[in-house]
Length: 390
Ligand SMILES: *Cc1c(COP(=O)(O)O)cnc(C)c1O
Image 1: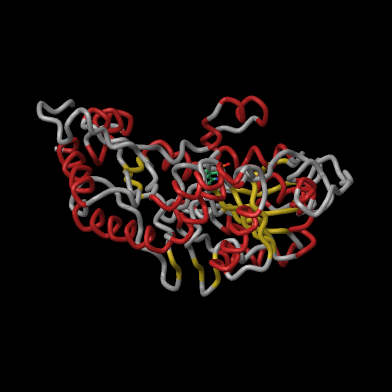
Image 2 (image 1 turned 90 degrees about the vertical axis):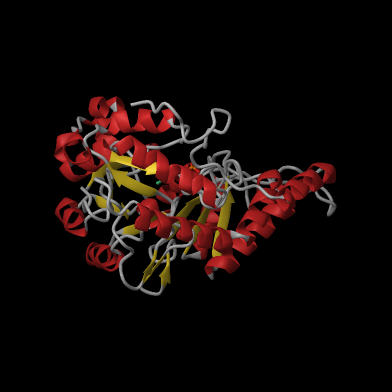
């Protein structure tokens, strides 16, 4: 399927998910290095404040990943060994691993094949007396059916921890993603909508949860331990829990502060790319993502195509190879969680138990939608898809 004349020159491979990095964050990183304070300090506090302002939130804790944010959110939500936590099979492994790290038992509820988000009816069927929490993932930036999920949570007294790794900008019925449930977890990993290299954030509805997460994220040391090397004189700290090393550094926050200032500009750019793909790929033999639901705001983190031999004339895996041969980087988000050997072996899961997630996971392809792409890049992606499908 390799074309004789690749669309893009060989030296210009379009890396999937490459983040835009601009001069302000480069200068801030240099200033941070020169300041001598590169660990957790004033820039982390500023990043937390600005993130709170952007979301209109009261309590935020910056951490070194969304995985850490999810793990500590489970602990703050009171997930204990033996507790069940319901989540989706169409997510990154970190969502499920965080439940296991907290000692909980992940229980999968299949997705709606159109939205690719967890299906509230499936969640309802999975609730037992041991259920402690629900972890909806706003897949690709599309908010989950939160009205229905929150109703189930209220009915059964469950905590809700939103995995907002794709969905910083998302809104649902006038509410912001990550502020609908009890806790919201965000990722600033290199491919996400706002990047810090590695990084994460938790938004907490309650001050108590935020305080516990802050302590657990820095060895279990009592509040403000980072000040101990500051200019206010030496302070003793106390270890009050057996915590983790999950704190964000000022070096990371230095990038995040300037990335966050452009979050809406980048969202605007991705929404333009989304519209162009929707128009120009409309007549091809692939299934495009559904339009955003009314009264919601999509985060436009991933643009997915469903490719299968029957409709598209090429298998998904051959499509991936053919796009790479055209110098276009592509991704798969995601093979459903039960496709992975660990979960099959340790938990006995089989892909067939979650048929919608299995089918999507075996046919989905993510094409580049980074705000870094210029119009010519987007044109190259479209041309490559047309060639591969012709
Ligand atoms: C990226 C991602 C995570 C993990 O984020 P990290 O910051 O890399 O730990 C969790 N959940 C989902 C859905 C993700 O896409």
